[in-house]
Length: 413
Image 1: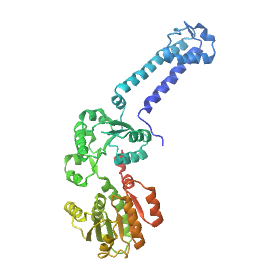
Image 2: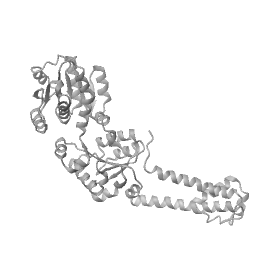
Image 3: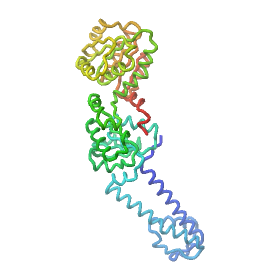
Image 4: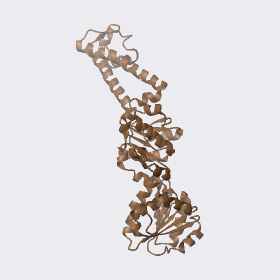
């Protein structure tokens, strides 16, 4: 896929201008026009005249003299080359100097209709990757306080993005980003407070960006606490685990529930942000199709208390909470005392942050329960997990892939 850097336009017009000016010089010299210091050029070969035409870019006509004789049109065209070639070279030199002296300002001043992405972590890369699938040539500006050199090369060379370092909460930097001409701002950094702080300052300076600022918030509790604020209402805020969980429930679980005759059993093995948002989505969209939800986690009781505090409606299904390591067989024996996983088609989601434990436990559960619909989570996209999943009828799900598949198209415009 060919990606266009923001410098492409500048390079294109200079080459185009250089070709035209060289052509003017060559046409003028071959039309019969002579030069006061090189009168013999009229009788020279074409390649000699081409050489002198190229020389106009370096020293102009200083050592050649001025056009004389020949047709008027030829002299006029040659004079265009005489003035144009040195001016073109001078403009290139001036831009090179300004780029060295003030690289950010010079590169940014030409940006328009661009998208500004704040952050250079995994979420920023996911958003950029999806953006490039839809808009491969759109100008993109990446801003972060500190960017690893390898990641900077990846962003600029693989995705054609312009990369600068700086604090997005500083008014000076915000004004330098030409946000009055950008399409959208995506705040994809790791600091939740900083993201909302930046959104507040940007909207104060550029109110036209209302509902065109995307805020990724890593903390669900903080995100929910901010929902009733003016900044949240004027922007689009989301959590990656929430987005991934919604995608999993809508794409896979709802379809499964619709095709099972009895009410379903769901086991959430791992109850971090991903498991909690899955439970929330199930409660909001499929509670009447579920018989029991069993939750397994090292701190399951504390986490379910937090969920119950945030939920606005009480569950209508049975619920079992078991504290322990999901990879410990003893935990699953406790679970078997409250639910029979050998009946019907129970859903088992291994959703801890440890991909290796998820996959190993999923293989063990598959050996015991051939009837279960099993999901094993990885964070990034793992070809190994996908291969093992296909071999043993386990659904290997990647948070990264779920997020990228469910980023709304409207967020890319």
